[in-house]
Image (tube, rainbow, N blue to C red; front, top):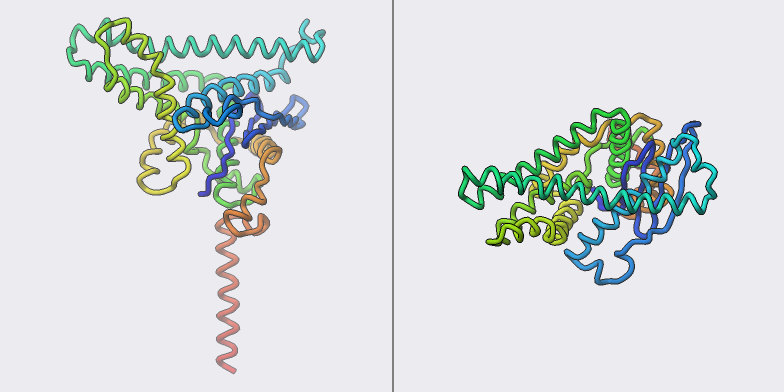
Length: 337
């Protein structure tokens, strides 16, 4: 596997792919056509080299991902909104209202996430479990495990929703497209279908890493004040996100037995957030990739093969075996003569 640098996200009936300073959203519209929109990223990480420094870039990329993810999700939803009074707005007014809605949604989402996944488990350990367990280390460990269970329960419950099931299928299409090109195969429906729907650089893996790293950080940073212990769960998030990002970046750019073992829990968790896509979803993923990434040049540079030669590993092997057999027969005939 060769690192490509491309990443993405599933949206409503579509896939967003990001490569360097550009991103593309491909959406399957209600009429069956694929709409592709390409834009330049207005990311914080592009504003100064400081924001791309190790550990700092983790927090910055997390914020960028939240903002970009929400805006692309809002854009994809617009194709399936029912007609209402908003349709009377001009494109400029609608874009402005969508931006405001996106910002408000991000703020509310962050507050809810902090309350449910960070402060909630702390309250459980601080006000309930501390009556029976005196070890602070054990309480922090249990708090972390509760956080993981809440997250797993959340992604499992929302997977029961019909619309979310389809989003998870597009999530699988996104991963399969990236895996296809990073394994040197031509980007077509057949090869994408054969590729894995799990990927080591997935946001699901990142969230699991964040929860595990939070246990280690909170073990080291302790306060006697109850108020400080509560706020530490929030104020240390940038530190935790920075460490988690570097961990995910390392495992996503290395491929060996040790790294694969470290990535295994995240890949297993992706079994809940990805589903096998159908061919039409794969076509959407391919359209999104091709809008921002020259996969043919990438395969030629990293695998030394032309895209037309990189159809699939099995076919390449079969062709090589056939050529070898022909050469052997020719040699035998020449020896006999």
